[in-house]
Amino acid sequence: METTESHPECKQMIMPVRDALDVISGKWKVPIMIALRLGSKRFMEIQGAIPNITPRMLSKELKELELNELVVRKVFDSFPVTIEYHITPHGESLNDLIEELRKWGSLHRHFILGKTTT
Image (tube, rainbow, N blue to C red; front, top):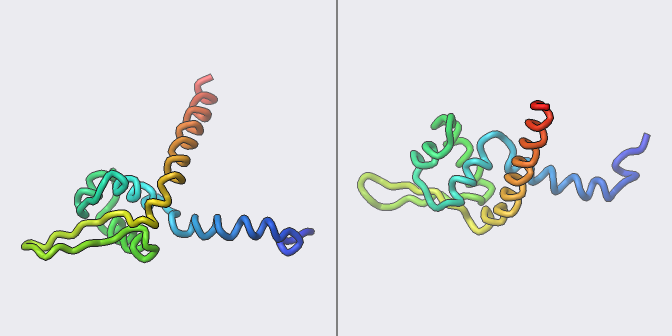
């Protein structure tokens, strides 16, 4: 049986894809990024834009996105304190990927639904 050692080009392709999927994987990260693509938002605005996300899950996912420098949390010195989240320039580098995922998802949905109705 051949291994990835006998196909170094395979490993070179897999590693960056695995890294990318580690950063954006899960049910909520891409929807959060989509919500923030439309402009800075406060926590409750993000939650309202994403159906069925719980506050706890949103908080967890935002922290992970911050750790990966895709999102920035900005605290305003006001009363009450205002906190907004926005996409970083590094996070904006995902825009083309998200758009391609959207296109492929639409094609796939049409493909699968077209098969089930015939």
